[in-house]
Length: 318
Image (cartoon, rainbow, N blue to C red; front, top):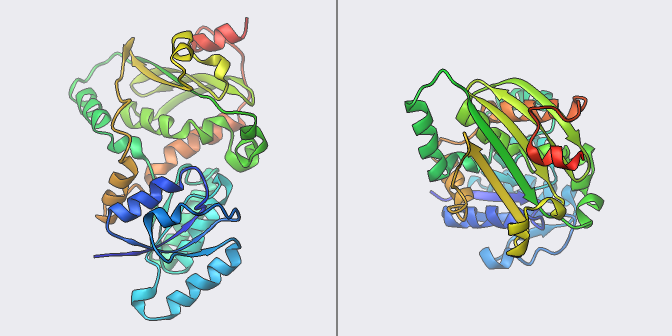
């Protein structure tokens, strides 16, 4: 069965992955919107997509389709717009009788999830999100291994994610905490979701440093103690990574052993779409733990460097 899709934020960074997933799963994109008109990527995937730079005109078009024959109505709305618009665009999808497939973070604040849950009941549709690391084959295998080897001792985990960004980042909506949620939300949420998926719920959460360029702290989960560090500053990259000309460094270690999951990322959005369309998507309850955690990290006071801080934080503090 083929479904009709609409998409918000088509000119943004993550939209190409959604366009590919829609096409790869045998569905049709009928309309898209973005205030920026650099939307030529649409032609790589679909013909004749109706495109709007004004959300109000997009809304009117989708409503027109809904009132036509059922085969023209939009079944799913893919949401790739800036973070602060996610809950509004999800509610839009529900109101026009469609399910939503929304990029993470699904919402910025936990209470937005409550409002979406009420809207799901009211309109009889669902809001799904993209938690692509949960469908990564290597990480599924790791989770199974951890579950099979029960232990009374907590694992020592270190998360390091450095992804270089130029001055544009802080000028854009991504650098505005009220719109992006800050670094922990915008670039860290899928890693925090992964850690809780692997090691259980949060018992302790601390922020040791928080600036525009980097942030880090400590988490204690049911089955792990986690030192974490996130950065968009190229100066934080390890020397060997810089020497190779690489601009991103991603590392998760468990008791000093590196988790290898650098490959296999190409089609993860497509896998999530396949699972969602088959009735096995990630919904509001799946998103809630990470949304609650990053909200707490965003609103808590920094406590400074401690013995449990990530080593890079300690070096930055010198």
